Image (cartoon, rainbow, N blue to C red; front, side, top):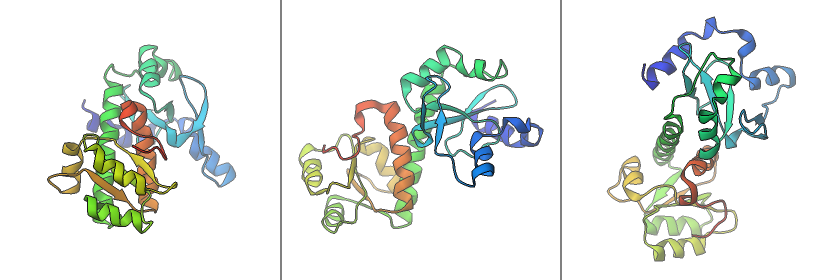
Length: 231
């Protein structure tokens, strides 16, 4: 069964799942009326902000399914959003142990999560453009920076250093600067032939992008700059 099919089977079987296997966040919401912000990694046992982690669920056929949106039914199995930690979870059969032998992660899980995060980022950028929360192109990005209307400055990882440096110098202390992907990956998502400089305005869309960017950073390494770093 392919990944999409496994997601469908998880949803279809939700009524048959053990109610005690519900995600921790749902139980805590019922008790406190607030959204629980932290989860425990099944590998490191460290408690972290769940926005820096990846949620997984076990499908009825015993496959471990990434749940980036956090809306699939079933007990949430949380892993820190870092390639090395997820690799360790797969290698040491952490998912099998925590589900008491009911589920197992396949060897390609880490690469699949990285690809899904990249796809999620591109989809979110496309939505930001359609909703008017994103501008692209050196001149438009420069104008947005000078007007103080930028939350994220996204640069193509293969963009020229001089242009990236000039825009970085215009970015104020509250502007995050990232270089997640090459132009050939960014351009199609934005409906452009080339995409080197991209600015995202403050707001809910920027907050969602922030979560995806930080998670993706754990899988792509130094290709993504951290918050506030000048490229």
